[in-house]
Length: 96
Image 1 (cartoon, helix red, strand yellow):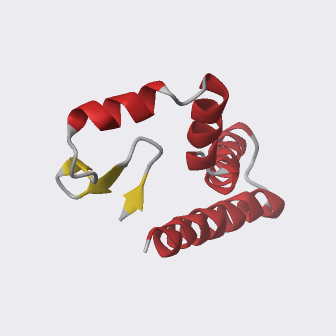
Image 2: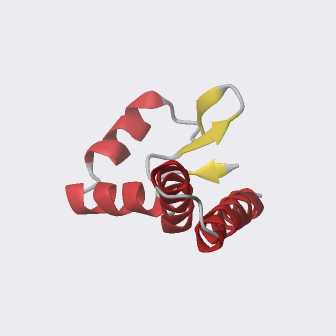
Image 3: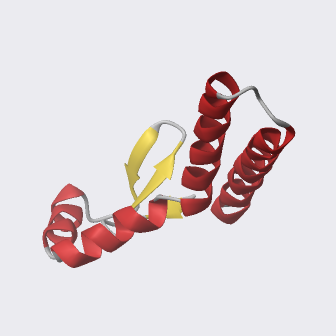
């Protein structure tokens, strides 16, 4: 259960207000957040490990069909899948 900057926590069914005073207070809190804080909160959600894993898998796919698939190309597949599984598991562990 993550509480975001607007006083809401994300549940399975969507956003639920975590404050007892209602939506008006949550709207005031959200309006008081600076754009720099919003960008920082958005950037924290993006995981560079996941991005690197996807890039490695794309490089592997392109190199496999463009080249004669030498052995070193399959290193991208191995590392890409490893990073992908590792980062997904790490994100799940930090959300608990």
